[in-house]
Length: 115
Length: 112
Image 1: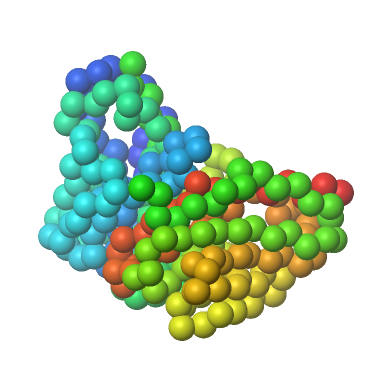
Image 2: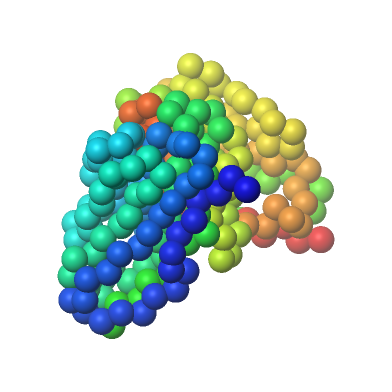
């Protein structure tokens, strides 16, 4: 089944403890992206990647890191999480150009709580 | 600086009637616009898109209208069904789809 898989689905962590949220897609998509969803703010893009080893900042990149060493994986790294990073996170992927016509495919989300 | 805005947080419509969801944008460089639907505990799913060179695109019960001079787009759902109840996000892009900017979302409730 074609899908975007995020892990974990739920995570509670403490301030300052490094964590990684994994994202994997099995559709051979070039484009991958991370978003966070917060009440009243909609979905805000954190980072995106248009190909292997190519990443760019979205609108809210502060406090996050990403890497794209292989096409299928795009992990999101929080080196020192803070409570303001408590949010619902989504990973998404798309074929180059086709995302405009057919949209990105989103994962089911990761609910992160930083205490 | 919110480049894509959905000013109505919620909308309630009777089953069978038309639902109209609105979206405004400020960046004239946007060249593609998309609508997504989101149910609780799920990721957003793509609904319909429109290129900036068009003013209308239809897909079944869903039609998106684009007014470039007003920097405004709208999603029409006709007829509305209870299963359409969800949060709807509009999004815009200008970088071949890499950088995608979303609005705040509008929660649609379709009552039987």
